[in-house]
Amino acid sequence: MKKPSELNLPNSITIIRILALPICAYVLFKNGGHDYHWRIAAWWVFFFVGMSDALDGKLARSRNSVTEFGKLLDPIADKAYLATAMIGLSILGDLQWWVTVAILFREIGITIFRFSVIKTGVIPANRGGKIKTAVQNFAISFYMLPLNPALFLARDIFLGIAIVLTLATGASYVNQARKR
Image 1 (cartoon, one colour):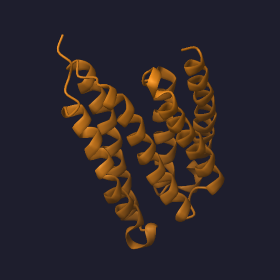
Image 2: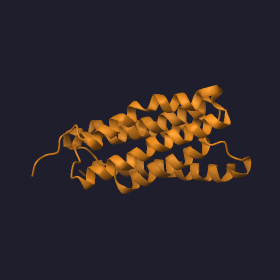
Image 3: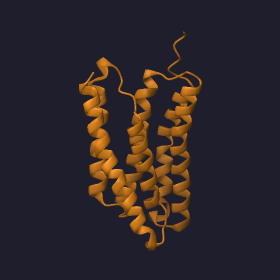
Image 4: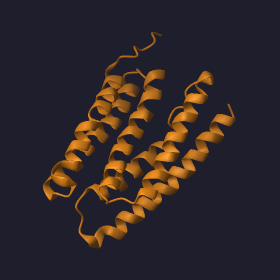
């Protein structure tokens, strides 16, 4: 069976997703970052960039074009996407810095850990990691939207679930690598 090219459509979508992050940040900060219409626009831009994550993965699997490069780059793109949103929201005062630091510390730590064990093979994203990413993105999107304050509790609960999943899946990746 022929090995898929590293520069295939799914990997190209992942690269475009990374290159689109400055646009995401620009729209988030437009007009001081708290303009109602620009926040809605920022949500949509982040939404489409986030959905491209699902698209590149689906294409890679359906076309049998999963590559080691893609398995490595896709989680990095996920972290960069999350970092752009969280750091932007924290700068704007809409997300507490301790949340941003805690989640990004785990995300960056696991990414570094993945690089440290790369000689034994890439640790691909597992089901728990994919669920964690979806919940993180969903929770952070609530902070991006100009919500009615009555919805803040629901938003905060989703974020709490994301924090728990973030820590639990981080421990799972470390245990998975130890068993290799």
